[in-house]
Length: 165
Image 1 (cartoon, rainbow, N blue to C red):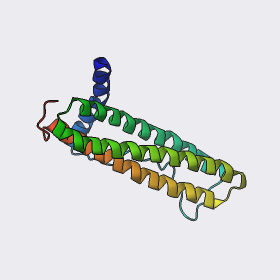
Image 2: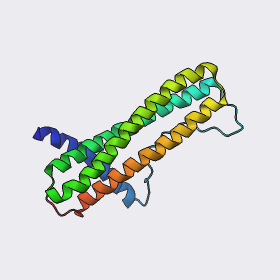
Image 3: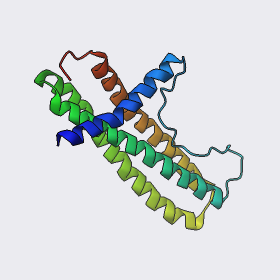
């Protein structure tokens, strides 16, 4: 069990180091993975094949974002287990919020995928537009999770929380 906790910790460490390096280089990458795929203009003709390609790209990128969030949630759970009682409450709140949101996003993505499979049979531009709106909302919600977790991890590793980690 202890070995598993250390492995989870090491999966997050490169992410945090990379973030620090990027900030040191005066570059800002505060935005999470963009899961919205391809973007077409309002008056541009979007064929059925283009819509399918866009959706497939979204599914791949959104799964990567979900995987990263779930890894970070797992790392936070390890930190919660090791934290003192005062730190556990706010950390657990962030963990619970993040877990619920990611679960809701996964369910909504599966539901929209099913709808898309049915709608693509009678494709028109509105199918692509519904996907685009869904992708934008998904990206916004995932950004909220990512930001909340990143803020907490920055506080933990900066010493903001005084407990021994």
